[in-house]
Each structure stands twice: as C-alpha cells, then as structure tokens.
Image (cartoon, rainbow, N blue to C red; front, side):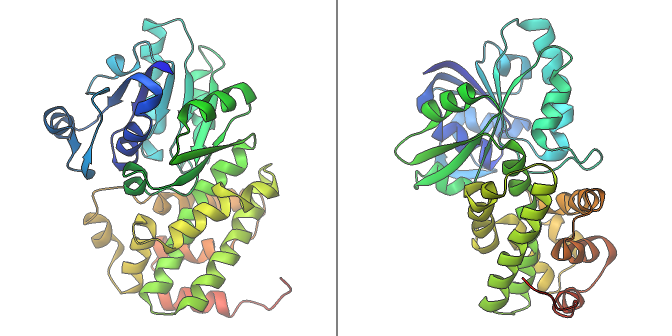
Length: 337
C-alpha cells in the first residue's frame, strides 16, 4: 500500500479512479480545478458536476492547491484533458523543483495527442520533467466508462511502462476483484490505440445518427482498427498490442457504448446538428475532436493511409456532410483486405 497517491484532475474519470484506487493508499489527494466541484466533494463527498451519485471514500482529500496534492505523493496519476497536460506539468515541475527530492511514479490516464507537437501524453510528461530528472512513467488505458468503474463493474485495463518493475508494482497495487490490470511494455501502441479510437468512435456515431445499421458500424470498427494498427506500427508499436484491451477492446467500447462522449458527438452530427451547438451543450471534453486533426498530421508525417480519419477530418474541420463522408468511404478504389 502507498502512503500517498495524487490524482490530478477531478472530472468523471479522475473521480472514478479516486474511488477505485482508494484501497491502495492510506491517503489520496485529488486535485480539483473548479472551486465548486471541490466544495461539493468536501461537503457531500459527491462530484455532483461530473460524476453524480457516487460517494468518494473518506481517505480521498479534495484540494484546489497543486502543491498540497503533490506533497509526499509516491504516485501521481494525471487525468486532465490532453490539451492541458503540458500546462499542468509545467506547474507540477515547478512544485517538484521547490518541494521534494524523491521521484514519484507518474501515470498518465489521459487519452489523446498534443495538437501542435503530435506527441503522446507520456512523451509530453517526459519532456516537461526531464530537465529535473528522468521520470518513471506509466500509462493506464483500456475500455473504461467512468460510471461503470465507479460502481465496481468488472473492468480490465492495461498498465504500460518501459520499466517492468514500475508496471509490476502498479499492477499489484491497483488491481482489485473488480479492476484487473494487465502489464504491457508497448507504451506507444497503448497510447496510439487509446487516442485514435476516439476518432473512429465519432465515425461510428455518425453512422448511427444516419441510421445506417449494424453492418455499417461493424465494418467501420473493423476498418478503423486497421487504420489505428497501421499508424501505431509506423510509430514503432507492436501489432499485437492493438489486438488487446488498449486497441480493439477500447475501440469496441467507445464505438458502441451509450456512455461514449465521442460516439455521442458523431450521433448528433449524423442527425444534422451543427458541431458548435453539440460541443456547446457538453460539459465534458470529447477528445476525438482535437485528436482527429493531430492524427491526420501524424498519418501524413508517417505516410500512413487513414481513409476513415481523413473523412472525419473533412467533416469536423471543413464542413463535409455526413452523407458525403460515407459516400467517400464506400466509393474508394476497390482493393484486397
């Protein structure tokens, strides 16, 4: 058991992790960005804004102060939107520089690619911290809906790290009878799978919103997995990683589950709602929007063909209609699988 574990970010997933990991630390400090969320957690032990209906355990201490959250933490789990990871770690680096000598383990539970640099989240974290020390990094990913994790539904995820001792430690301490972790050393494959599946999930939602039926969605998931695998392998990943929990497992869940924010965005687009209106009505982030643009850049940089992602990029950023996007996929040149 750890003495202190810090979770940076109190959205639905960060809050769910504070509930599910409460067993593995004497004290969990949960860093909260919004004052109203922190006040709610302190008063009622419930995150009414992002995860209503679930009590946070008594050993979870919500705080608005990043220095307090990180104080003496042996493990730091980051659960903030991908576009904010660099800024948050700039602050973390400053706090660590002035307040501690010991090096915690850093776990990224954020799925996405940084828009400008096209870096994976563990790369961003490593880049921000390497000026002080060589951080021990891990990535937590896989098919997870926050509400199901919070209520204790059986869930299997991946903990990926280049350091086997780190992966073994986190696997042992984080796992419970309802939250099972598998080790993997392929950080690249795990992160690419977790990021790009959100793009395919938007496309699956579009198919659903257009009423295209189960055949279309099954085909889209299958061909989407091929796209993700091509890109991941071009970036140095192992093909077999994408056939596991962080690849096909996460992809199937996000493309078919009613709790998927990215799929929901696609459904509404397919039904004809403007993207700005859809996003304006959502409190939580749909990572697939920003990830689509970053993925297209990365695919072109690595010379990888990604037709589904290309159509989603045209739809989200250049006003292509959902009908034309589907037509563009179906009328491509015929080829072998």
